[in-house]
Image (tube, rainbow, N blue to C red; front, side, top):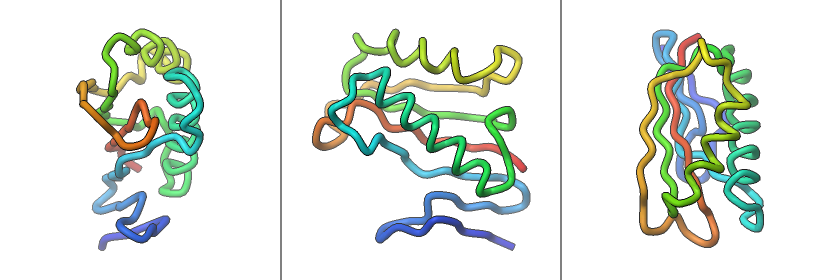
Length: 114
């Protein structure tokens, strides 16, 4: 059975199938924030999305992070390390992209389990 949560006009934020949770691209609502601020806002959203699906950040398996300026990656990494316990780090890739629209600096996609 497939469960879908938090529908938007173009997708569901969360899709769960066989205990696996897939979270679509998540961005900050406040594009005036710097990289650290946008990262914090996204990670808070991920906490909420994981809770809606019956999980939490300790159950993250894989994360892909898209950022528009690799020079800002250390700011993102600092917030990331504050958010997760070292023994709960998922696999991760950070990809530099030319544009995420508007003043969006970062977008995160995640996979977890229940």
